[in-house]
Image (cartoon, rainbow, N blue to C red; front, side):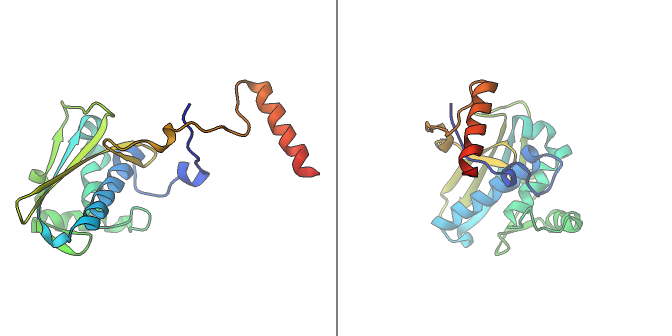
Length: 193
């Protein structure tokens, strides 16, 4: 069985809602896409950007604000610190001006009704919460990346090996209640000494 160390702060996140999978995860995916792009190129090289939502993200995207979260992530806003009272204004500005400012630095044409596509009848094989970003660069090259919102605000990139798939030996593996109780009481006794 895979193991991934999680803290209570990983499980109980501060961020926008109503859904960590349909709102916070897509916001984080947009941030991650931008960060990965900035590691390779200047944002000024991006001339056009398209977002495709698949499966569950497409079916419930409007109700859960997936499209809004993606736009705010592309703008470089942090879901933990962004003032929720400013969400409507930020989204209205993008729609009215038909442009988005990537990471708060690079303005490009962007019409949410056209550039965010909802593919509700199509699901990608890895996970039902999938979204794809496609950036058209000034040299005509297209960079496309797909991410999956796997729950709890966590995001996994397509073809990325999940670090938790490596075998880890736990100090107190739990096979049944008695094993847990024995391991826990042994640890308490040792820490008291």
